[in-house]
Image (cartoon, rainbow, N blue to C red):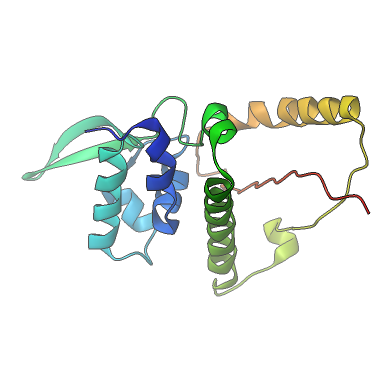
Length: 180
């Protein structure tokens, strides 16, 4: 059973579900692998959220295999991902945008909190950074900036997880500031 597209964002907007989707994005993960990556989430809770995401069509089962007497499922993010579509965002109300943005910020805060909870942190060595800058751009300059940024990031999105690769979260927010 799949959830209508306009409701998928609502299903995904839960901190644990967002973490599951981030962990599966760009790869294939079993529930056991997810439990290892999200060790702070109780197993029953994790399995319930995986089932919710799968039932909503936000996770696909790419493969099923027998492991002992059980069936192990391998999950993937469906083609097109789970980010609200441009159409969904264009038709969203102010309240819906507030919920989407709150979920975005909540997931970012949760990831940073998990980072800070590590036994050892070194922001420089770990490549951690955060900042706000104001860009003064006319519409044409903004379009060139957005296109250049997309061209820079797009090839990196194709990288598969690997032992020599550290997953790094890049979160962006662009909004016009009120003049005055």
